[in-house]
Length: 105
Image (cartoon, rainbow, N blue to C red; front, side):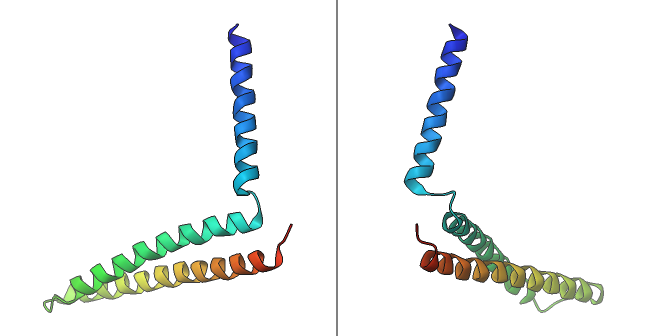
C-alpha cells in the first residue's frame, strides 16, 4: 500500500515538473540567461546600496591616520566588486537579448 502511494506521488511530481518546464520554458538558454540577469541585477542593487552607505560613512571628516589605509582598501574592494557585478549584469542582459532575437523554436 505504502509503496504504491509513494510511486503515485513520484509520478505526480514528475508530471508537474514536466508541465512547469513546458509552460514556462525555464530550461532554454533564454530562460537561464533571464534568471542570471535578474539575479545579477539584485546583486548589483545590493552593491549600489553598499556604495551609498560607504559614501555616507566617508563623509565623516575625522579619519585617524591608521584608518586612512583601511578606508582606501575598502573603497578599492568595493570598486572591484561593483565593476564585476556590473560586467556580469551587462553581459547577461546582452546575451539574453541576443538569444531572444536569434533563438526561435
